[in-house]
Length: 131
Image (cartoon, rainbow, N blue to C red):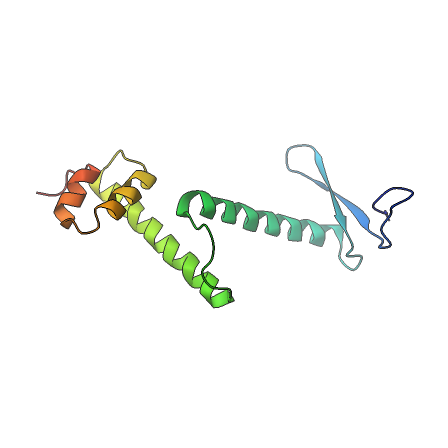
């Protein structure tokens, strides 16, 4: 059991420290107030939460979701699905046109040239598959 704080300013809650291997030969120390779970369960929860954090980091960097337009779970899911679909379509465009441009450059070009004919947009992306 552990307390968090110092002698003059300490929490009233009791915590425990769970030590788990980090996969690189070291160990991680996790602080939790869950006494009903085994160290293995705490480790699994931590790893799952970390995977979620990495996914949202990837979303912010690649899919460019700055904020969510809705607050319900359904609205957030739909926005993520739509952003992922748009990203995947841009990846497919990059693959099909054999373009050397980045996904970000392709996205910007498609956004800027939205009303241009599709054939001309693909040529600007660097595609060779359009006659």
